[in-house]
Length: 161
Image (cartoon, rainbow, N blue to C red; front, top):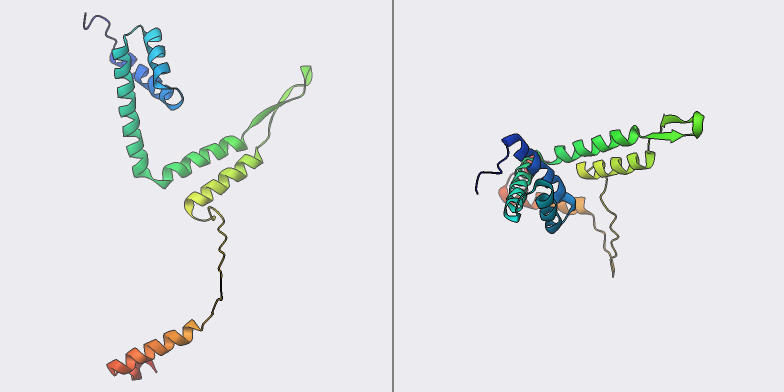
């Protein structure tokens, strides 16, 4: 019975794309059941769709890895644009109107995450506790004496003075 229920390439790619979107949020058992009921295929074909969707994800993430930080910064900026342009319905009945009100708390959080990603903003606070006595020494004086000692051994101390 092989080949009787074949679909065209475009339909096949649409199905693989839909399965890849389901893979983000649903367990495999649910996806298999969904595919078999929706597309009227057997479990083996459903597993093939899942395998192909996972291969697409693998290609996608290899590209993301190559792009590195720029990809993540772009995504954060897109989210920030959405937060700035958030629309809210105000009023009731005939006096309803849609108003654009930016979600400033979300914008601030996204900005912080962007800064952390770029290394501008400290990612987390660290408390350092030191037990015992702390001795502070004059590092400049020690460095100067070491340089003078090295120069006197080489006989080129006249250059430094």
